Image 1: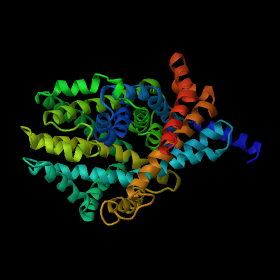
Image 2: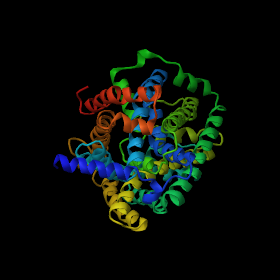
Image 3: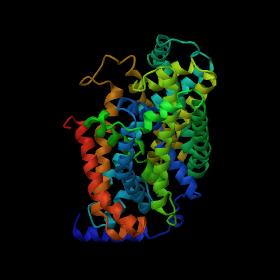
Image 4: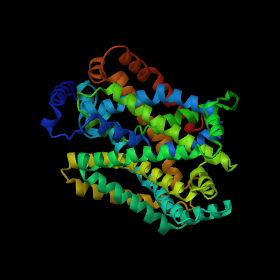
Length: 468
């Protein structure tokens, strides 16, 4: 593109950005609270309730928690601010928002590729995310049937293996999750997303608090609390630092297109800084409360807190089977886990549906069905990774592992790095200041997004490829 073309494009983009969102027909969140619940729901997913407790257990407890909190503050929240900033200022789907802001800054519109990567990342992530979410839904019925009661560790292990090794069962449960997700997204921002999160997020928090209350009756709450909040720094390793950094990045649902899309529905009058801090604090609080709910139950039954991914689907069901009211507690736990999965799933589906409705003129119904069909077909590869295709591996990784490795190890860190560079170095101080505000808070955010966040993301990436 010639310089004249670039400047003309920048002028057109600036004029477009100056139009009020309602004049351009852009849907907006009804209230600031609706956005906070939706964005927190996007961030609060399987990572908070499934992954955070087991990686805390694997990395020694309290010292890892402190390390994680530092990474959230220095890496996660600044990058979350950057992604939502792009969405709100662009007021379009991720590719078009990136293109408009690039033209506004007088640089190549090829920056829209970052938006495209976000949309496609959400598409791929959901294809294997819904498989694990389907297991969580299946376990609601397992817990309710009383199958955990009195079961041995071998029995619980066999139950889980029978689920994942059955391609029909895994496909059906995953399809149920996708169908509910698509139904919510098809109804739109106000009738679908807002209504869903205003029911599921308070429900999730209520169940979580009830589980913490139950954990206090086990006699091991003090042990669980000490494990999480009494730091022993001798248990930390270099790997622990990188695990905390990586989980801080991914637990906030960054670089998957969802936060940018949600930001595009955010009214200008809402304070971005206070809102993002609230979301970051709520997301972190849920992870910590989940730990307080889970670890006392684990310790009360003499089980291992560092049980890895099996903590939720094997170790906890074993504990539920031995505890008073364990059947009810098990049902509540897996309902909560399913709520967390669904609130994240809708944020992964929304970016693609948003683009199809805006740029291709499709109805939400058609866009939602088309996108869901593509995700469902791709999800079969992840389902078959645990049964029919279990022996087919690429460099030792199953299809499920490959998708997880490519998205979380390569695509998301590089996309996050690009967003940090774009908001910190490409967008003007005036443009970002107009969204974030001025003063000490803005200066701190700008310093973090320009220097600290890129270094942190590069560390995650180098760890993923085996350099660190």
